[in-house]
Image 1: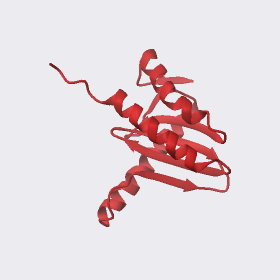
Image 2: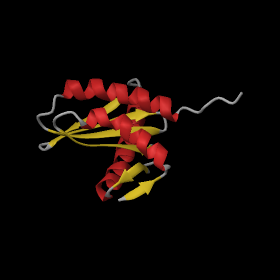
Image 3: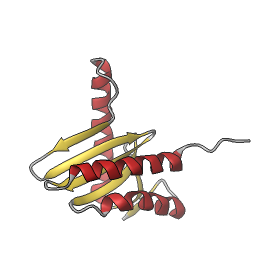
Length: 129
């Protein structure tokens, strides 16, 4: 395992944000990455690959949506024969969730919405003053 871009305290904070998502039956993995593809926190090799490719995919979809004037991409859900991959942009970061096929997607979306708010709170710059 490698620790990327964070202190031990930050790694702990990121894990706390992801815990409720990871508790959902059928969620296999949940990670945070920067929008330039760098993993955040303590990740194995799969996490590193997921971080890099997710950022590239989300960037391409965001650009496509912009080019065709079709609003703003909020999240990307990919369905495969193994399960689902959900990628949600949160400022300069993304939360990536990998699930089994039979996961309660509604529960994942509700819990992910809370995780997004928590990540926004954690990553917003603190005003000087």
